[in-house]
Image 1 (cartoon, rainbow, N blue to C red):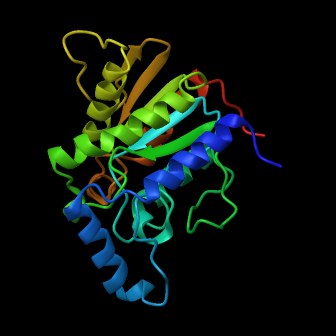
Image 2 (cartoon, rainbow, N blue to C red; image 1 turned 60 degrees about the vertical axis):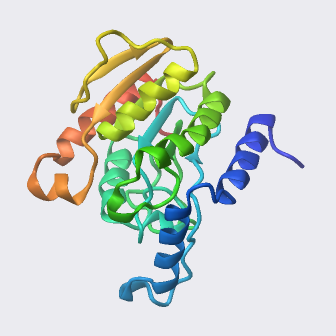
Length: 236
């Protein structure tokens, strides 16, 4: 039996996303990485394609990252899965009651998100984790489509890093939601009202931030816990 209309729409969107080949540099990079692999994962078959959104089809909370990691999402096929950033993020989501498990290792690991959906601003793994401006703008189409499908349920958006923060502001601007002026500045713990949505900023759980102590577990828990509170999401 087919699922509810929104579930079907999100599945159909995901199917179109994974077939995207709009950015030649990203296509070559993601496929080169999937072919050459990292030695630790030499026995695995890499995903090597764009990464669709994942999680609840009726999310109260939307979490936006920069892009999949070359040997994380680009390997596993699920955003923030199989890399150090994901280890930090899912551990925190579990602590605040938004994830079933404290880890996310592969697409069939039994992990679930509660009232939460994850997406990336750029759906393909970029070299050095740095998409170009043109690649960002090309991929914005997919973010706009996904936001349109979940806009009636989302009440909180968590932007992981300045890149994601700017992507959210731009996407809501294209949807006709005017942000405060001057443009809200990104910062850890920043909050901005965008129509019916509250935008929260958090430092990205990259190794550069977590290894240096710029982002600590309590800091990440505070932002995600605030999102759970604002979104009125309670774990089962």
